[in-house]
Amino acid sequence: MGETGLSASDVALMNRDGGFGEGWGGMIWLFAILAMFGNGGFGFGGRGYGEQYATRDQVQNGFDTQNLQAQTRDILAAVNAASMAGVQATNQVYHDVVNYVGDKYDELQRDIAGLAVGQANLLANQNECCGGLTRQLMQNNYDAAMRDAATNANFTAQI
Image (cartoon, rainbow, N blue to C red; front, side, top):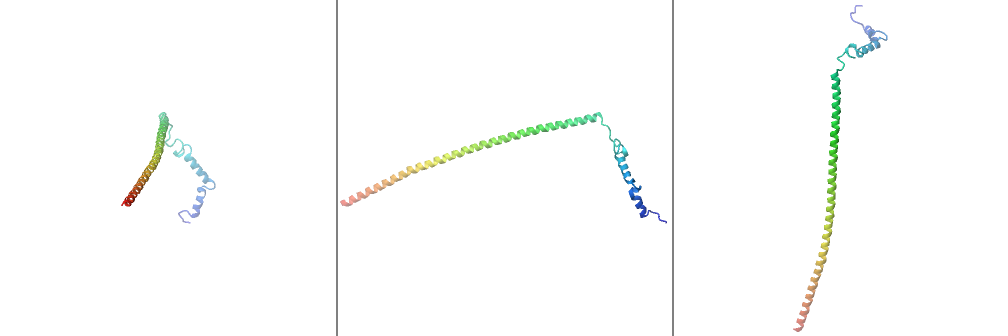
């Protein structure tokens, strides 16, 4: 026909099942996956991509690293335990101080109450004392006024 490229039907036939006919598309993909990730295929899996067996020094370095990590965990646990003990001691001191201050506050309240009672008794005694004194002064003034009145009456009677 004179066409130089592929027709649409040619492209559709070639793309059906990956271009390999019935059932071949899945097999091709399976083969590609196994070749890429299988033992040594295409340089990706297995020992073909720069992996080597560990040397004695590398194994020893791995064990040394694990020992250092274990020692670091032990040190961290000891620091945490010491920190916790310090916090508990500080909390106990704080608790003791709060209780001591509370006890002193209660004693102060009792002392203030005792002073208030003493002051009230003092005022009562003062009122009793001064009230009696005031009554006595008033009685003395009354008696003096009565004497003056009697003296004036007697003096007036004699004149």
